[in-house]
Image (tube, rainbow, N blue to C red; front, side, top):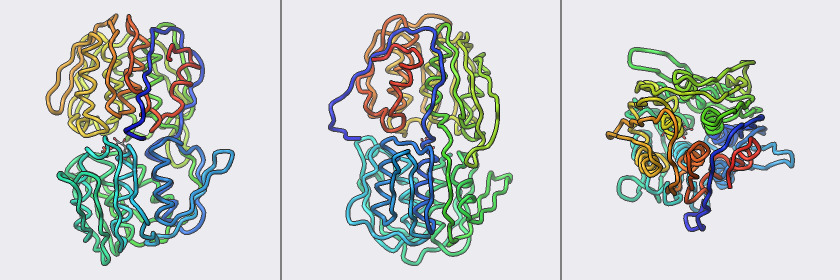
Length: 444
Ligand code: S3P
């Protein structure tokens, strides 16, 4: 997304009777990985259900810049002709990852053990985010880097020409860091080991196995130990991308908060490393029912029905944070209408997402008449148990999830809510407005 593009305001008004089926787009995490692993396999990977959001399209461009052939059929099927493990070529120019921390960090891992130089940049949001968490483990492989202060973009990686395998314990619960290390380990000899004290989303591990890599995963007292055998030949795959539970969260909370609503969401991911929001909403009294549980594209999925519900505040334990890290902004909107306090613990990582999401949500919620409080790693929302005034315009800070969260808030507040710039929504959920309108939401 271009930081210089004119802001696109979006206003939502109190709505009722949301009805119908919400066809949620493909999972962003799985989409990035399908393109990257496809580019590292030998032969043609075929991807259906790929999220065609700006973040993922930027990753597709990056894979082309590194030598893979990436094409889209008219029916939306994507094809990646991979170059094989260790087969990337030095890109001719800067890799621009736009707004995407995931794309950028995973690609850094993928090139880190190739003997060439890559320069990365992104939009104003991405250029403000910490990259030291990736550069530190990559340095253990022999990768060198030079970036702005705090390891921020733009930065240049000089890939290791003689990489060594590493053992790395994650200092933060981050699937991006875990994945960057595993991607770098693919082109290192021997066994690369990642230890994660808290489980994070496991799409990389699932997909690596699907592409034929050898991976051992062990649960131990230290946490999950993942051992990857380096320099495999990755086989091309057919990847059916499941629907994104983080995107589904917005219509789900909209239906919970608006009177008379009942919506269906088919094929939503039920991966246990991603389902913390759904568990939390059910604890709050949300009427969510999952049927037809099955496996699609190596991921557990189910059909979800959501009905308008009265909610009560809960305390979300810190060990659940990683499984719903992208869903706290929309949970804080649900919490604004619940009875009593909702306390979100262990959420310090929210401060280094596309924006400082604790600060962005607090400012916007307070402007709309909701009481909140925070510490560096905790946020509390005091629910009204009924009406919320609304009526304010909120800043979105180049953050898609902040924009969509406040758009949902305005569907249930007394007065309309305006988000000052809805354009970041295109990074992850380009069809958000049409989908919400089709369900009956007043959004314009
Ligand atoms: C992601 C990991 C999470 C999440 C992001 C997607 C991934 O980030 O917030 O939207 O696909 O690996 P962290 O690894 O920083 O927690």
